[in-house]
Image (cartoon, rainbow, N blue to C red; front, side, top):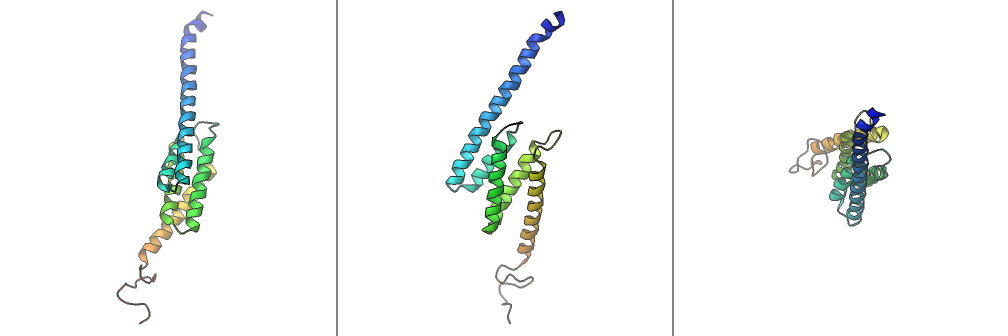
Length: 151
């Protein structure tokens, strides 16, 4: 009993710090997620991606905003790929990968999303490198803008 009385103040402080940290992370995640939704609605995609990434970085178990931010970034990446906006798609996929990399401690909390985002990002970067080697005027490898392809 005497030992318990000695450690009780430390236990109380420890529990308080854990609760304080969880509440703070929850509030930050909520604020950042709603700001990202607002920015996405107004068409400011680059800023929205940044706020979604910050939301992911506020991960703790049972945080409802992290899966929602991941889903939003995945849908932004998919829609951008369909619209051939490779830069925006790359930003969204990179935000998923970097956000999930930051929260990996003993295990990755979202392994399938992390793996899928990395694979999509690799494919996209490969496609972007291939497109960069094509001539912008003719989309033919090795052809220059000064010489037409059909001469």
